Length: 353
Image (tube, rainbow, N blue to C red; front, side, top):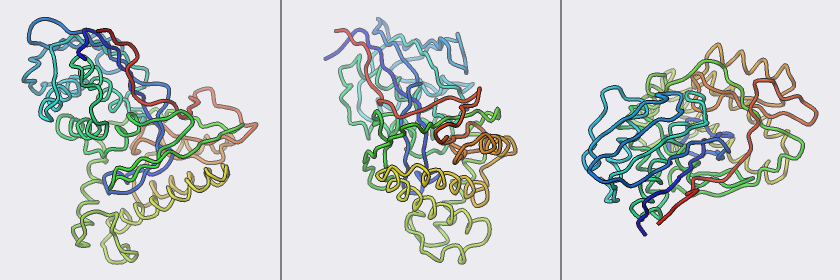
């Protein structure tokens, strides 16, 4: 049913473990969070989409207008590239888009590693589809559409982790995602008196400008040299068969996939101390084998460990952004810490015929 007005919300996400594995057909374990992005969409007369960034960190108070049927790439990128890209890619996929006014409100800090970009893409997609009566579109298809926008319109060669986490999130559940089959399997996260917090390293990251794309290119080169389609299929002796740093990149992916499986087992056993050790191991691998850390991130991890964190690691691909820490009972949340826990996924909040 077509609507004249709809409000769509898409959450940001925290990836508990499984970093740089999504674009390698591997495994991840993210969860949606309470913070996210809200799009108020209203159908309007004419042939344009008018988008207003109400309080986004990037472009607060700015407006964009473009042809709804044929969006052009913006000259200055930023939030406009996401909105225009979604409108264009929905139509490429055969999904309808009506002229509309969009107001964007965000609570996820940009550049934090909590996936403000995926929340923006997913919320805009759901808002536009609700106006056209197509909000029941397949969510895996929507994840692919949002990922294409990130890849082709924004220039960040990310995988599907962020979009799937935002679209499929469940309260009190993490999501074991197999990025080859796109199977999503919820697993319990019973924190009890433990707490998960994120802390800003105060080094903002931009995946399209950081080493993220270089790591993806190295993964592809390693797969080519090994004669395989993706690092999910890398043989056990791949490290010794590849030149540095490609061998270390493959070793991280192999070990990280194993850590995802070990974390799922620990969560089913309510063994949060084991989860904390796996977070530490993931961070060490991201730092040493994947070279995705920075001095600011390392200082933040050290500060959290000194304050009593049982485990801590960089999140959001590294190269700045936030650090995730698992605090045992009795540990004090840092003043600049944001307590996070799994929350519901993307949804329509308000709709009217």
